[in-house]
Image (cartoon, rainbow, N blue to C red; front, side, top):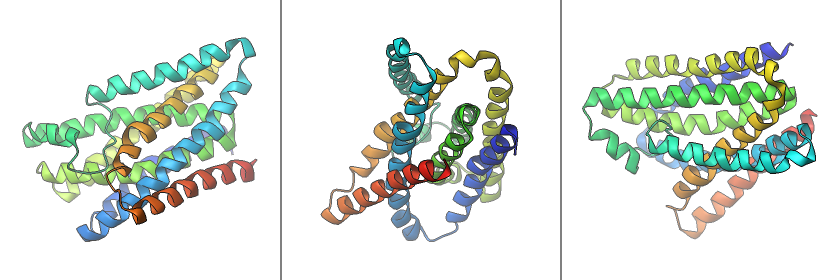
Length: 259
């Protein structure tokens, strides 16, 4: 298959299918959802960190001259700051519970504006994810696959949290699913733009990979790990460590196996 076919296939997998999967989860009893989400968040944390440090950063380093390693490191640092500022602007939505501070602030608005804010945030987030997935595929098909899978692992729990806010904002289940599916197509738009644009700027491709790594590291460290710290029992800690190692191990194994 061509790189474009891979990109379209996996952006749809990470976008539309994750939304549909999250919508199906919402039909489960709330107790089941509350028990299942921590498992997926722990696994997603390990997967995101693994694809950053096992896949994206090493490939970025291979693509630049050693004298540019410092610039590459500054790109990762700049990316972390960028996503911090973006989250402060309430455009980057990764909360996995409907009672987090950001969601409480959203509820201060009217119902419709709260729902609109969630959808705008998801669209921006999905658009950026599409660019990062395409950059990975343009570098290496195998890297693109593990990157897209890592995106998918954190998309479902994020979408479950956002669905809960949309329902509380007055959206019906049908409208919440429909609008989220539409929003998910921003992933494909971002990927297609990157596919046709990045080849003309090959010299910035390694820095795009570094920026992608910064995105995943920020999500894991600034959002997911603090969520895990809310559960402090010994059993919960053991469960989190095992699932994080499983996420790390799976991505590392896939990266090695696919190659």
